[in-house]
Length: 88
Image (tube, rainbow, N blue to C red; front, side, top):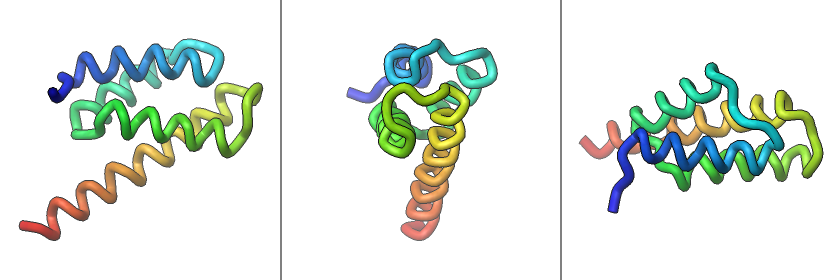
């Protein structure tokens, strides 16, 4: 069953807090919501968070995790977009 963008954003918000040690601010919530509305799944976004934690390890600053998370999410979105267009 596919989640709605709102459900995806809520799930990812709570995972963000657990992974990065603080809740997302409004700007990050907006980014997550936009990513979900533009086709990224909760699994993909959570995997991007995992990449950020792997990059810096546990206990790093949220601002450091955030940079990697956003960069990884954009990479995934671009790959999905490229693949979708190539198959048309």
